[in-house]
Amino acid sequence: MTDHYRGSSHPVLDLPDDPPSDLLAEMDAIADDLRANPLHVAADDAIAFRQLVNRRRPYLTPAQFQDLFGEWRERYAAKVEAAGAAELARLDALRRRNPPGGPFVCVCGEAGDPSDPAWAAIHQPHVMLTGLDKLVK
Image (cartoon, rainbow, N blue to C red):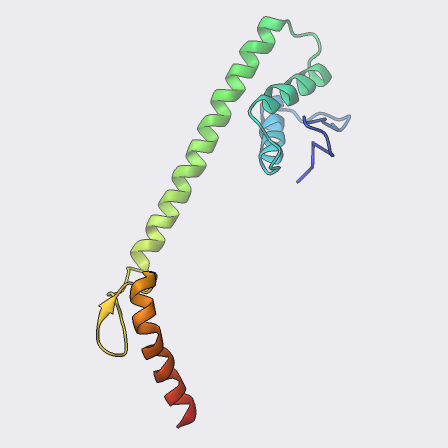
């Protein structure tokens, strides 16, 4: 991952001299790097794309730039959406392989939610005493 911010409030691209064959794929990689930085804001995409196009395709007109930027944004949004759908499918498969168990049951026999502070205040001593009994014996 490349830090394109380097202490600045906007991205400053340090591009290699030998361009990859696909401008949009190069911007995809740059956008992935930008989003890894907590300073990223949506306007940074346009700044980075302008820097990339000025370096790789300086002959584009403003209208051509806008068309190409719009095409890239649609392409990148589809990529992000597909990655999100794949992650949801992975999590769903994981959930199906590991179904939730029954409710938590205290050693005294009462079922409840251990993340509920009131329930935990009552039942935490039961669990701790049982654990201490096992250590002492």
